[in-house]
Amino acid sequence: MATKQKKLGTFDSVHLLIGGMIGSAIFSLSGMTILSAGPSAIISWVLGALILLAYGLQTAELASRYPQSGGVFAFPALLLGKTREQGNLWGWISAWAYLFGCIAGAAFSAIYIGIYLSVAFPAMGALQVPLGIAAVLFSGVLNAVRFRITGKATTVLTLFLGLTLVIFSVSVFSSGSWDASQLTPFFTQGTGGVTGFLDALPLAMVAYGAIVALSFLVGEVEKPNRTVPMAMAIAMAVVLVLYLVVLVATLGLVSSSYLQENEGMRYIPLYAAAFSLPGLSFLTPLISISAVLALLTTMIVTMALASHTLQATAEQGALPRFLARTGKENGAPLTATAVVVLVTGFFAAFPQLTNLLINLGALCNVIVVAIVCVTVIESRKQHPTKEAGFFHAPGGNILPILTLAVLVASYVPSVIQGGWQLWLATVIYYVIGLLFYRRPRRQV
Image 1 (cartoon, helix red, strand yellow):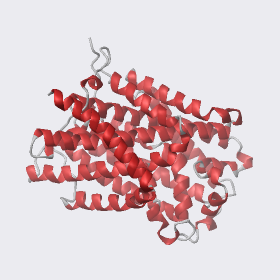
Image 2 (cartoon, rainbow, N blue to C red):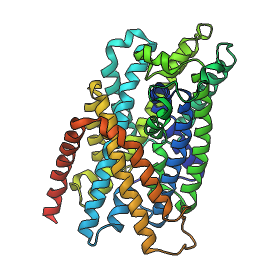
Image 3 (cartoon, one colour):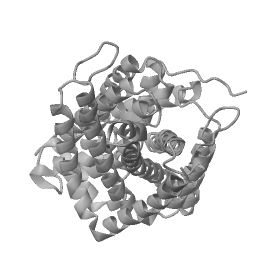
Image 4 (cartoon, one colour):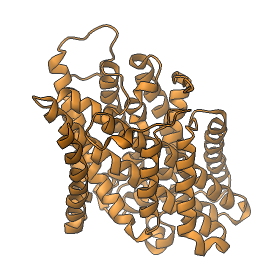
């Protein structure tokens, strides 16, 4: 008999979102934002939080009205297109893009687990790829046994990560080495010049991508019309404050020019800052270990989202039905999880594909955001008045239109920089998906 899973309340939901957001970005991508924007990267991270919160609240509105997991497929499938077939096609386009975004994030995290460990412990230098693959397998097993990201073990882990960032910041500010003069000039230090903070915005937004996790897992959330938006607001506030403190601490020791001269430090900025404080030697292994744990947490969340997306899409018949199979004891999406592990492990085995992962992941994010924003507008057309018992994101139709415009404009540079290789990879990816999509449709 399947074990009934307890639904997520407000505390568990906040915990899940914080655990998902305190991950790869602050420990790795923050360095790239500093490289591009210098001190004005602070603005990138604030803007990124506001934009993703606006986007998250729109998904919360859809989740409140249509409370079923796999919302990245279900929401467009229910609301877009004139027929069920057309709706399923829109749902599949959205889910297929979101799937790669999750896998890219998990693979990126796996790759940088190997990097952090090899830097902190040189003996592991030759094991970067095996360590990354091991991390993928470990995360996959936890998802297969339906390990609760909100359980006691991960509560301790999230608290440890938060405490590590606090210890790092306090140590830096009290070290006597932190230099406030490095924050000036504020806008012109980065390689992107005065507008570098705009170039850094897409990378900063990656840090908050898990904000939509609850909306797409809403079937497992208690009282979603209240819990989802409240958890998003609380989690975003906590994470943003923590990130800003860490960024300011790092910027007082690590400048854009330093990262230009030391390419190997660009993806490990907190380690670079700790390394510059020889009197606090305990910080470097602490940062490395914490980074690995944070990356693992991100992998568990993103791989779970990818598995649930595959499962929900298969349940609707838009992908082969075998992908919807679940474990008899715990209800975990076993087949979908196995597929996610295989694909993520493949990308983790080839670190040279990192740029492709970032650029294709960015393009897939644009596709998902565009479809979700249009879905929100369509939902409001069908339900023009606010109804009691449902959450409504503020701002009316201006919010989804503005969100779409800002997000697409932010991602355009990274999409263009990907060149023809990015477009070829996108075509190949969707052709593969289309082969799977058409097969079950013929059987209906």
